[in-house]
Image 1 (tube, one colour):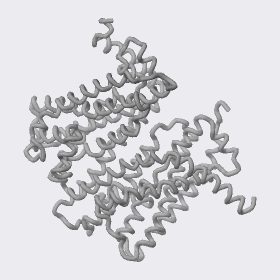
Image 2 (tube, helix red, strand yellow):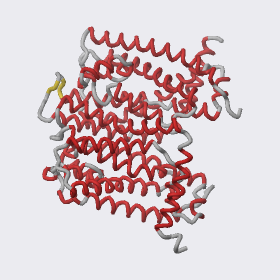
Image 3 (cartoon, one colour):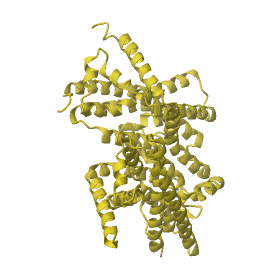
Image 4 (cartoon, chains in turn green, cyan):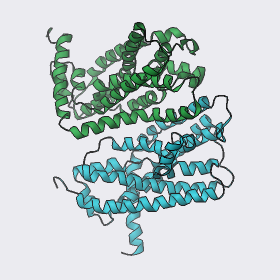
Length: 272
Length: 267
């Protein structure tokens, strides 16, 4: 048991399960590229609209198109980083309602790892690819000297942002163990991130910035992008929060995972 | 079939679909949260982008925020679940039962869309307070109310036909995951919901002007805010009517062919 509960064992088992799910999805090749393209297109339409607006108006609250592209690229990459491994969270209520979550509990692998690898959806991979492309292009366009510490901060911020969004989705999906449904609230929270995490907080005024920092949508991209662009001085919130953004993601995710572990004990099986 | 029988069957079908949509009214209400947030966001974005400028391209800020808010609502009314519904019916073979009904399959779809409009239109008006608060919705331009309502009706009809065309793909592919939502997002761009046509660069505006989606949202809302005046209003409504005939005819043709593709599995 001690061997099986070790992290190395969980990672190995997760890899085997993921490989199987990936082979399953890879059987439908035409569908694979179509869904990837659809995912990427869905996420980039908002940027396309912003690009059209800025082509006419020049800047938004002092942010040029390349500044906004960096922010958007960070958000989309962070989104892809959590969505690729964790998109199966959207099926948790299905497993709970059908009672098929039983099988995750009797196998010797962490139920969350089994849930994550139960199926691979590649439309989220489209999000990640689109995010990396946008981030790469934006990094070469913005007026930033990419020193080693800035690259390190960017990487930490990407994973931090992924953990902010992923943590929220993980925590909310755990509600399904008690209420059998969590789809609507997760959809709404996802909409908040999709809508408000993509724009410089200055757009929403000082009160809006505080609201987005508390929610904490701003930690995904706006605050780290401000640090990288040397704009932390113009923030409506204390700049130290911006520098701490990667750590905040880790804290949220840890809290969400603890909550998930607690809620899973409320699972009652089928027909309840 | 007598005339009363003809309309009676259609109304019976429509009212049964109304009850289906109404049964999910809580879902519809929660589904309004995201558009409400989007309207607040759009108004904030345009306020920030205008900055110190009060008029750009002859459009004052209040006119712009009215445009984007109203456009979001018009676009939302056009959202319907015909595609997902049809894919499910085709996939599990229930489409066979639908085809055996005395009312034609295409007519059933149109009744379904009317039913959605009847349930959703009053619910969407719940967004009006948000719009007024976020964007300071202005009154319609003088004399624009009548043409606006006519144009909205035409736009809704063009949108119905376009949705049916997209849905008909299900007859050929059987599998079309998430296609409906992607289409909704793309049509948001092409219909001028996200960015009005006059803001677009010339090359992009030319493309969008030659596509049918601008008649769905851009034309009615541009009439409302007074972007079109005098004869231009009726010219725009004429273009919408033309699109309705074109897209409507195409829909009828495609659906007539599509029903021959149906293979009922396991039935």
